Image (tube, rainbow, N blue to C red):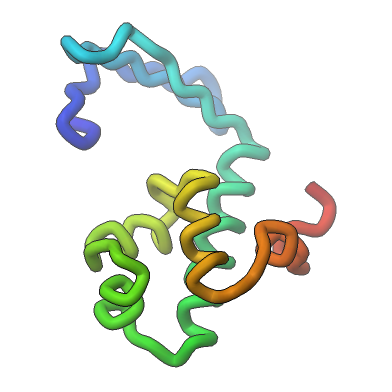
Length: 111
């Protein structure tokens, strides 16, 4: 189960590429492909989000409340799940930084 969408088939193509096929009445069948670079970028984004939150000195509950999301959503973001450009931008606005500043971190050098 992924969210409220049932995973119908899961195929591991190799050690870094995964295909998930979903069956949901509201979504057409789709495949999600995560290569090595995608997995690395996801890990870097989650590390950056967590580091920024920790730099405020706030715990997850307080930070999530002030950001306007629930603590479970914040936990998932810092774990590397569900970060979109919109959620990253929300972080940036809250921290009064630009998206460029977010990605201008040693974590993202060389990508």
